[in-house]
Image (cartoon, rainbow, N blue to C red; front, side, top):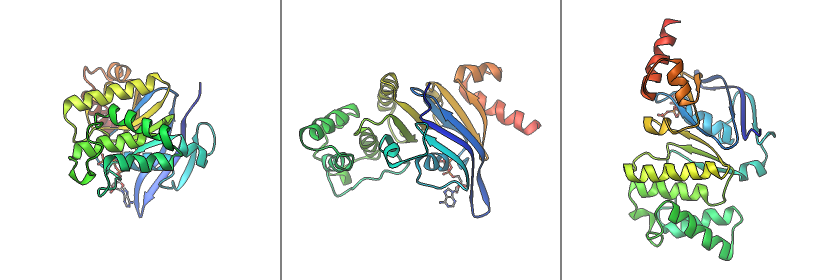
Length: 241
Ligand SMILES: Nc1ncnc2c1ncn2[C@@H]1O[C@H](COP(=O)(O)OP(=O)(O)OP(=O)(O)O)[C@@H](O)[C@H]1O
């Protein structure tokens, strides 16, 4: 069994605010790990630390069982919460830029751009300037950019915010397809039917992972019948302690 992500005893403070407090997290190859929890719980911070965009105050991170190297980062696909796109460029030019920095050129680049654009249903909008895109189209273009180099590990920060239910469903079909192909995905979400589709979920609250497991196993453990109720049960249990 290979572990694409291993974070151990991670601590992070912003000024005096403790954002992560002794968080350990191991992802198994080929799983979709849902990182869930209330707004401000530290999900984005944890993802950014795993990516190397933010430095933990202490703790250890391994990507693909090694201390993170530039090569390991090349195996990552990251979709940030806010879209990092060039609005004055067309969708095609944006994808072309991200493909080039990942070392794709010529015909291979062109066919990969068409492939990822199709996967997010933007193949007919490639010539449009991103400035003319809706919020949902920008989210999908950001996802396409994260897919471009066929990474082995995806870190997707609220990838479906602002998308209509049909597109959301299609994107989750795509995530499952990537998983079947062996990719590992860590996804933050507030959408409960997405949580139910994860292989495992980690519930982050006040900087700690307070529950972790397969959604069904967590429902059994807390004697509840919906994923939403896991939250409530875990919080109640925490309040009693
Ligand atoms: N660069 C920063 N400087 C100072 N405080 C920060 C910084 N980044 C995050 N924080 C704070 O850390 C806490 C956790 O933020 P984070 O974005 O990780 O939460 P989150 O769980 O992803 O929330 P949401 O679900 O709303 O996206 C928040 O209180 C936030 O204000």
